[in-house]
Figure 1 (cartoon, rainbow, N blue to C red):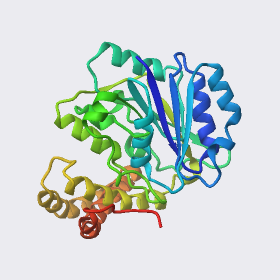
Figure 2 (cartoon, rainbow, N blue to C red):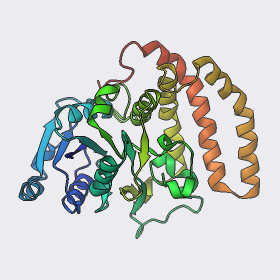
Figure 3 (cartoon, rainbow, N blue to C red):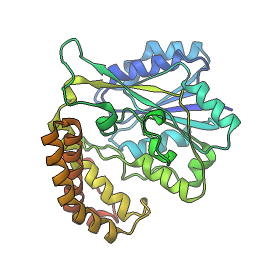
Figure 4 (cartoon, one colour):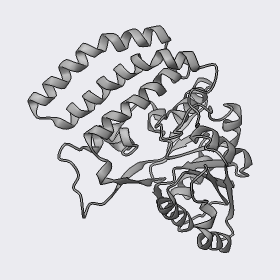
Length: 321
């Protein structure tokens, strides 16, 4: 089987170079690497010419598509997938380092199992530890999902494999991508807004069609996380954009629950979340307290933002001006 890797990048050239280098170092290299330069201020191709030569020396096809205006993650990934040639496509973020077994692990899964979508582990690689320290309240197993690290099946043992799909590292076969009609353009980060859910929406539609999601424990990436960004204010601020995302996913039918019932549940759980948060603070379990505050704000932001989200659902909710 042939493998294509699609990476969308926007103004993160230093991290992107590490991502590309890790693909060069694969035990089994991909057949093709496609970079979607989503209107970076400095054209990516000007900064990675040396890596392009190395890729060609390994017989890895390489393409860079630059957009004039920022498309957003969902649309840009669809562009990359459309021009790719592989039997399956690996989607990576532009700030990850792939393990040497990444491509070979995905290839083994697709060759041996009737899987349509395969998730890989995302671990944290903290940057700046020599200058900063991780906050005492930070615990990956509780808070890691907020910054897309620690979707480890051995740690969580969740029943639904779809819960392990992080957009920074997953693979999908071409037929499935075409059957599900790819990513929705109004999902995925755009213009500084940390909208997400493009992968959740895609997986949810695939599962509804009876398609299979698997987990490849050796297809790991290490997500580059600056320690300076691990702070309570930033984490809680992320709840605003995720609240908007949830409104879109619920109203758009991506999450299998009636919109009115979902909103009612959000109202009902607010007092309980507040009480649990206070109890965690009293017990000194600050990681769970931060997580509960995040969930509390997420519910509030979901309720508050839904009016505008519903109003805009017939068009594209967020565009760059």
